[in-house]
Length: 474
Ligand code: GLN
Image (cartoon, rainbow, N blue to C red; front, side, top):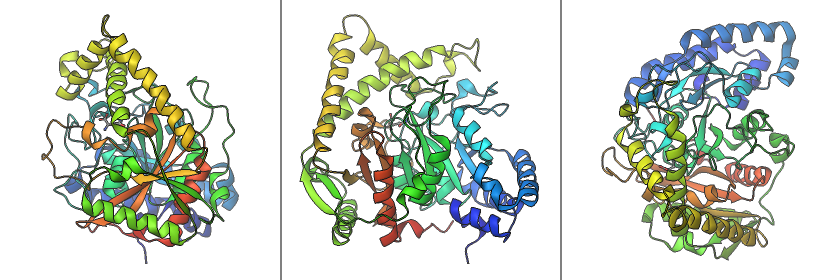
């Protein structure tokens, strides 16, 4: 039988409804497991033990008082989660893993954490990440590197690496991450969990410490696709505090994906994604997953998409440009410390961005990059005229050893992530096999606001596979 910390969100809710255990049991089990495992994994920057216990007791009282129906109003009541440290949490230190923000206590709450609290979810703590989300491993964190629960010598992926490791090591029931150019999908893939990068504007960025404002997308990191659907419903929606959020109604994702099948689904398989060089073990696992989709009724269609080297190139320019502008606010007057507290990676990105935006270079770099971005958006639109979804490997390799890729933070690991980010699409990364004993991820890419389609296909895949049911022994 599963231990409480190993439950999914949906299993936890069922157990609470039936009175099989209490919220306090769920929270205390997670806190206990954090105490035992986190000294090795280092997923958490801060554990909010006291408030978690207090909130669990409150949740138990509500359940006792109102019974099952309380879950209608508070769909995540009593469910403990971990949150990436770039979401502002009222009264709780928020550093984005940077020394410059050490000691910064936000005077307000991000929309995502506010919505989760209103839905009854219980914050267990803030998780480690690459500082300011610059990276794909957590190695640029100004504090420490998080270890991959599948192999402690490897990185968990990044930048939402702490959140991914916390889910993978069953230290929480679900987690929240943010994805600018792969930061949910990469760690989901390398840590063997499910990660959803929603459409840009589907989930509010209010209170998220900005990295690249034109692509930052908060999203759920979970043990199953069904859990991601449930959490997305809670955090998505129009927000008066973020003008880029979509007005489109938020559907009941979980309900919509319940009875789906892969039959007749047209899935595009981009030649450029599969013909590129990537680790043979990863390729094998991904191709086997594609085969399984086919055997279960999906139609796999070879398609042509622009080479991802273009996305990677413009991501590098646009992301650095936006970083140089966003990080300019950290002047030591309103937040934390002086600029000399910036780490090397943040400095490098600010310098590059300032260069790309400076007069004389603006047209050559930034403006040109924006034009190419439009071409990438059109390229996807064209592809989606003939297919429902696009499949690809999430990452070209399994997680690498800590310290083995110095100075390659981000760039070379982002090849398969940046196209979806540049076009603002919705993409889900789910476990799709193993190589060298490490998890391999596959991703389903959908059009903007095609979350139902993407979640449905990923859920259907999880119905016929059990990769997502495997967890590391920590
Ligand atoms: N790895 C990418 C980078 O370093 C993406 C980071 C992110 O999505 N926040 O830029």
